[in-house]
Amino acid sequence: MHNCKKTRERLTELLLDGADPRAVLARELRECAECREEFGDLSETLRVTSRLIETATPPESYWPGYHARLKERLRAAQQPRVVPGQYHVERRSWLTRFVFSSIRVPAPVGLAVLIIFGLAIVFSVRVPDAQVSIVHVPVEVPVTHEKTIERIVYREKQSRKSRRSQLPRQTPADPTVATLQGFTPAEEVKLTVIKGGSANEK
Amino acid sequence: MTAVTDNEADLIRRAQADDPNAFCSLAERYARRIYLLAFHYCRNAQDAEDLSQEVWLKAYQALAGFRAESSFYTWLRRITINAFLNHQRTSAFRHQGQTTIVDLIDSDSETAYESRSASAETVYTKVLFETVMSALSELTPSQRLMFLLRHYEGMSYDEIGAAMNCSTGTVKKGVSRAIAKLRAKLATTNTDEPERLTRLAEC
Image (cartoon, rainbow over all chains, first blue to last red; front, side):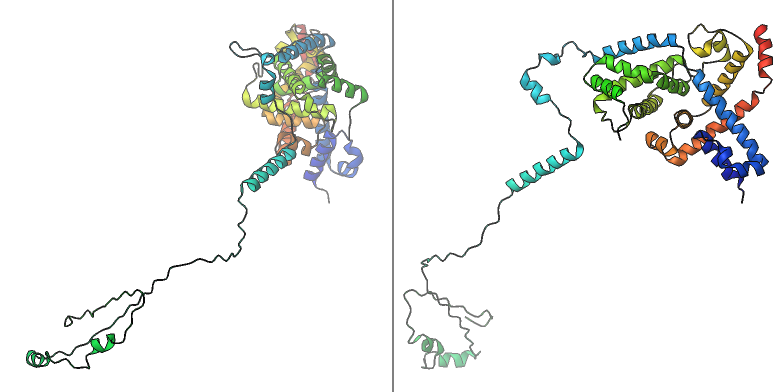
């Protein structure tokens, strides 16, 4: 199926490539008058343009002057620029030149060197992990025997009268006396008596 | 693949060793092609000389980096395209669009297109020349460069896209627009033009 648009695009490509479309698109050009006309216009346009581009070449007499001017510009570009007040490059000491010298290094190589350098710094700075070991060291610790006796004493609330009648009599069943009897303190005893916090306790 | 001839390779080696004469010999080989590209790009002889010499200066400075992985001209053309694009970005041409038919006929300049012999054929050629230049001037600098690289340099769309840092579609569009402009302009210059111009020249 003939497609004028595609044929015209192909025509342009072939002509720009310097090929002859009549050999490649013979059938299209034979059968389609519009494509044939397009081919004629297009080939003429490109032929004329091509010829005119070449026409713009200056004559041979122009070129010696052109090359002389180019040589002059190259010479000017070669000469190092000397700015007043600045050290000339040649006057620098070998140490300064060494410090400021640069070399061309391919980017991957430079990157690899940087990575290696960075890793070396990281590993050298990093503190090695402490090895855990168990060492048994006998240590004498002074032991202080400390005993805390906590006792909560509950007392019945009695009337003043009955309390008075009972006060002089000390019965053997008194819990405080009974408790402390037979208690032998150790070498050092710290005794803390904690009383209950209720309001009726003394 | 190395596409550099022995003689050229020798010149390149010497130029890389800071021999300006060897570099000038290289420049003599390709100066015309670079000049023509520059001329059609900026459409003025003086700007073309400045721009083409700027290309050579850049090439001289970058020559140490030439590894002969492509032909010298392919490498040089890459520098040319970059120089053109930089020039386009940084400054306008000094004499943009000043080439006219009157200049072409009357100029005392030494360029071939400025011959003083005003025969019908010469005048017709000059009219065509001005027509083409006028059509090119209606394009953007990028489109103009795309057309020149495709038509005059024979580069593929992909190569141009890679060199100019744009898509293949953009290049195709630019070239197509340039051809359409040229066709429209040249269509107005009919075949009777030489006779009419002969009479004009005789007046």
